[in-house]
Image (cartoon, rainbow, N blue to C red; front, side, top):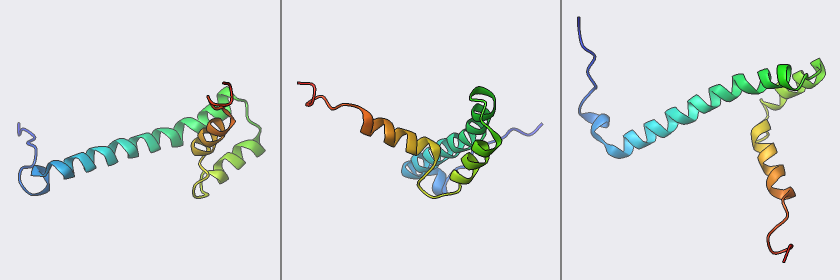
Length: 86
């Protein structure tokens, strides 16, 4: 049985490249999980209608309007600031 060895030399020896590669890999994994989890959550958990479900799919194709980015933007703006409560 052949053992799998980690590549050596070249870019694999560069620490900055390894950080970039690791970060991009984690980001891609998160994107893939979100692509799967958001529609499942909408269908099962929120009982979305077919129209709402299709609108969610269309919104996923628009740049900068991913459901996760728009909800985080809304939650940041709707929070009262600490200076307003003083």
